[in-house]
Length: 298
Image (cartoon, rainbow, N blue to C red; front, side, top):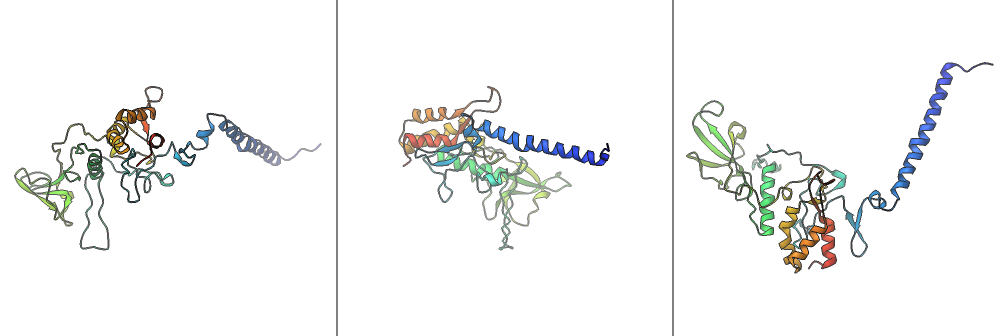
């Protein structure tokens, strides 16, 4: 009885392994996972954790945040507001991303009038935080000031030029790097030298970077998650502190008792995972839907 050549037997063994793994990994495993996903209690999460309104219409997912703004991007006053998002135009699952800006990003890019066809302006992370904090403070009727922010809502950063090499010697010039001319600088003088607004020709890198703390409170009234985006840009929740800040506005806009609104916030707050992982979180979409069920927005 003749035997097959070794190379044929090796190929047949490989083919058998391929068929077995295809059945197990390509068919049996996916079907088993699909069956498990249909178990009551798991099906909703497996389908995407969709959320419906009082009319039964699908309005989003509890896992993906969304903005509550009008057509012009203005916050709807009768709704709790989410944190900022850097994903696309905001909470876009197809372009989930962060801004990639870090704590050292404090200098804005300013537009050069000499190139009118090009927009070279760009906000630093610091100025974004300053601007958002002022906007939240104005909306909620609280102090929106923060350390290292000007009263106008840009980063309070100076470029200090020295007579000597490097950053040594007498100060010869001071420029407010985030206030383009003809703006009036937030600080009249620095160590006896008048502060100037910034022109497109200023070499900011040649000056010593100095951040001015200002007289803002040590702990800002506006929480950090109200002015910074999450890493994914899709975070559906806000901190209890940010929700608490918004309660008086919501109660006023909807003519509801403050305690009733606070109870709704508590009902939509989840604690730390396993009691110690992460931080308490308020799901904004589900909270706003509960608000609409209690009393429709005006």
